[in-house]
Image 1: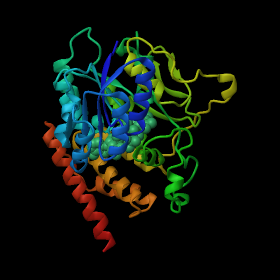
Image 2: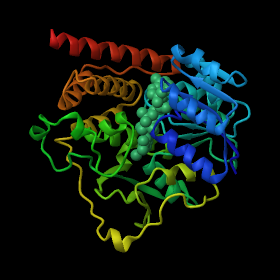
Image 3: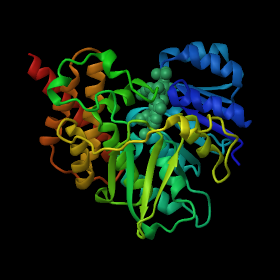
Image 4: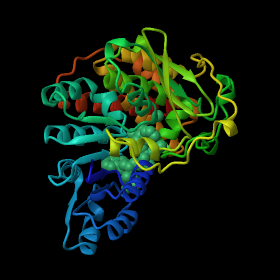
Length: 388
Ligand code: NDP
Ligand code: MG
């Protein structure tokens, strides 16, 4: 059983919920990190008294150090790596957002840590390399090095306990459909930031909430599932399920389908990742299906939400494609949240960047970072070129 954890991104939606679950389970939080939110980080550190603290933005380092003169206080990218590889933690929870999660995950695995992974961008961009590193590190019969936190992947992981991988025919990833389910592309032209941020079933950080509205989040999850469960994207299907009660399903070769159900509450998959292979103490409310009554399912609309289709294409191409998809999308979401582009522009610009991309092979983390930076440069040129 996990006794001590570090949380990368402790001030975010998953980070805060992880602290809540850890407290309920009696797990000691020994490391915390934030990007800029030093006030919340200080508050968390006062309550939890961890050994090591990281504020990525160096501007806030003196303030943090002044508040905690007796703790290890670190900053910058190296600071994140210090938390990710902290020797006294049994498990690292990666709740960072975007590609910022990649290098800390790689360093944690190289340092022999187990990682509970919420940061899906890690596997979208670095899946190939992480898989290679894990295959060199993973000892037979030991606990898995990477354990999913994303609710769909936690569901699949739970469905696969006791099963032989060769008997898996298909993975069915469920998706709520986001706030614009049922709408046509033309109707999306006028949507406002506040409409985009009103997710019908989940309360999450802003970036993933925007990604859920374009459905690219589900595309990222297809890629994440390919690496977690060793499947090609043709064997991973997306199914819209507006109630977000069935978190995903696995179909086996005999036609049997297993699913994992619960209310949409991320504390459950977080708890599972922290307690695996045991189960925790039910931090989330028990499911009452008689009250839920209806569980419905429908096909995704690939024409309106064409980034989902593009994500499948990128998944099939592999190598540099998912990296470019992620980089263009991160930039697009940033521009959108800053009010510089509209909602449908996210979809249009990301599509254009992918259209203009030619496959590059990747062998190292450095290759990924170079391709990521180049894609962001192209995105900036495209958007600012069109504006001038
Ligand atoms: P949030 O935006 O709420 O939190 C992100 C955390 O990462 C914050 O602690 C933030 O610090 C920190 N951070 C942001 N940018 C950087 C950076 N460049 N370098 C270092 N730290 C940084 O995100 P969520 O908690 O919503 O999501 C985290 C990850 O989990 C994402 O990959 C998301 O896709 C995935 N996920 C989230 C779910 C959810 O319910 N929220 C569900 C399933 C998956 P600060 O607060 O200082 O900005
Ligand atoms: Mg998810």
